[in-house]
Image (cartoon, rainbow, N blue to C red; front, side, top):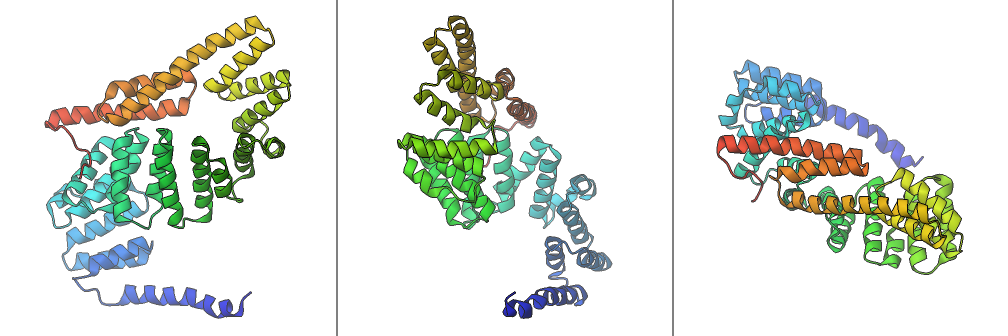
Length: 398
C-alpha cells in the first residue's frame, strides 16, 4: 500500500466525522437551519436531521420542520408518507418550489403519473430552472413512449447540468430507437465527454458501436468498443464489423468466442448464420435460424432468410408455412413502427397506445406490451383530467 495513502486514509474518516459533529452541535441560526437540515438529508445523517427538526419546531417554524421531515422521508423512499404528512397549504407558502418537487417526485415513484405530471409541469412553468423536475419528466415521458416530450425535457437537463452524461445517454437511446443514428452518435459522444463511470462508459460505447454499424462505419465501431464490455456483446459486435469489412476469419473467431459464452444469443447466432451460409452449410443455417426464431419470433429479417433458404432446398411446404408467418409478422412489425411514431409525436393520443398493446402481444413482446398498457392508462387519465379542468396542454414547452 502507498505510504502516503496510509497517512491520508485516517483523515478521510476523522475529518467527515468532525465536520458532522460540528454541524450537529453548532448553534442553529434561523437563517440557515432549514438549509442545514437539507444538507443532513443529502448526507443520510438521521441524527442531524432530527436535531434540526427539533430546533425548528421549538422556535415555532413548523412549516420548515414539516418540509424537512418530508424531505427526509422522500430520501428514504417513503413516498406514501410524504403525501400523507405534507400539508397542501404549503403549496402557497414561500416553500412552494420544494413542495411541488416533493409532491411530483412522490407521485411519480408511487405510479400516479397523471398527478405527478400536473405537479412537475406546474413546477417547471413557475421555476424553469428546476433540474430535478426536468429529470423526472424526461424519465416519465420516455417510459410512456412520449419521446418528443422526453427529448424536450432532456434538453433542459442538458442545459442545467452540462457535466452530466445521463441526459445525453437517454436522448441517444430515444434517437436510435427512431433510427436517427447520426443524432444518436452525437449524443453518445457528448456522453463520453462527460467522463462517466467505467461500467456506464462500456454501455455507452456499446450503444455507440451499434449506431456506427447502422451507418456502416464498421472501423469506427471497432475503435470505440470497450475491452471491458461483456465478452458476448463485444464479440458479436466485432464479428458483425469484421464480416462487413470482409474479414471472415476474424469474424468467425469472434463469433465462436461469443457462442461459447452464450450459445443461444440471437445477435451472435445471426452472424453465425451468415458464416455457415457462406460456406454452403444450408442445413446448419436453417437450424440456427429456427433457434433464433424460438427466442425472438418477431425477428422478421431472420424469418425472411429462413423462407429463402427453405426455397433453395426445395422444401416447399415448410417454405410456404414460414412465408405465411413472415407476412403476418412483417405486417405487425410495420404497424408497430407506424404506431410508435404516432405515439411519440402525439402525447395525448390514446388509440395508438391501446393498439400498440395488442400489436406487442401479437408479436410476443410482452414486456413492451406492459409498458404501452401503462402508457395507455396514463394517457386516458391525463386526457380525462385535462377535459375536466378545461386545459389543453401541460407539457414542458419552455
